[in-house]
Amino acid sequence: MDAPADPVDIPTMEPVDTTTVVFAPAANPVDPVYPSLDATQPEMRAVPVETPRSAFVTNMRLPSHVYSALLCMLDMGFTNEGDSLAKMLLKKNGDINAVIDSNTL
Image (tube, rainbow, N blue to C red; front, side):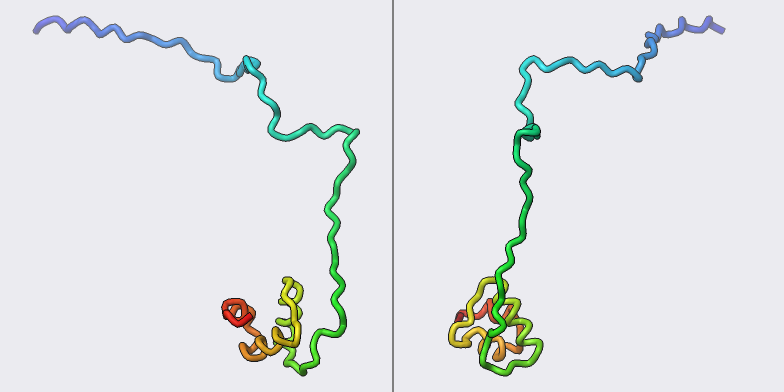
């Protein structure tokens, strides 16, 4: 038998310490994304604004589900001039989507 070939020289790697992380300061500091909150700025809070709903909505006698749909649409900003919105809701059986999708508003 022939002599075995020389073993291949495999480079060895030294173990790397992965527990230490070094952060270098940026060369060009960037403005922060959010402004700083210092004590000189007044505290701002969102205040809900309630629009008073009048007790009188319509002259018509409506089923309860149509009346509640009418109140919902009034809260959305629709108007009920001449009871047109109430009549449309009554015609569409209180279906708000059908009233909005109709072109007769």
